Length: 241
Image (cartoon, rainbow, N blue to C red; front, side, top):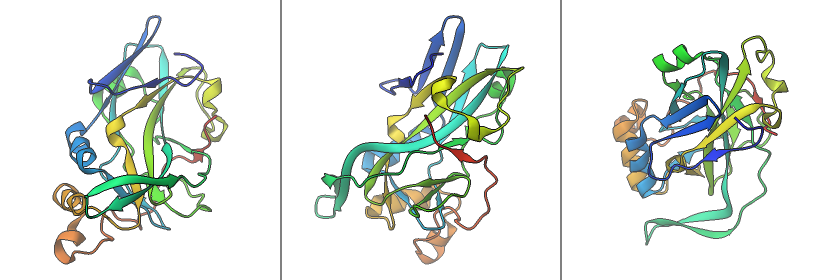
């Protein structure tokens, strides 16, 4: 591990291995094939004032040979570039049309089941299914990421290692720059924030694959893509540094 941002690029491999001396960490994106289906047509994620869950969900498997330390898994969502986008219906594609609006500082969300031991990581995948996307810049509730419509974003997974005798007691005190950690970026998880789906192919994919899209199938409503009214119990968000 290094005390600086280390982003592992997806390239050809579905998983990345980060090594520091005898310590080895591997992080794999679960549901990769589903993410690729969305990515190929331009993934869109609905954002609302109250917050909307993501579909597909960011879910990863983590493996390590470290039997001494404990691992904390974080998620943040940052601008993929400095552009603002528009969907061109006649060409069925997204294109950059100007500079991005200023974005608030990215937030870190610690997975509520953290910390993990090596054995725990081998048994279960880690899902950030309760993360929500909001366009309310004043939103401070836990589990909410502030997303601007018509801007492209990149989710990132950060894995922090601590000694067992030095656990994280308060997530709000964590600063990545002061931790031993590794960051993993899966390009296929990029998405454009929207208040209503622009590409009909995205709508169809959500209806087919999202188990919570019953409202879509029954009535064609746009507001059924993952329920937005459920109370989240995720660990508080904190700004990365």
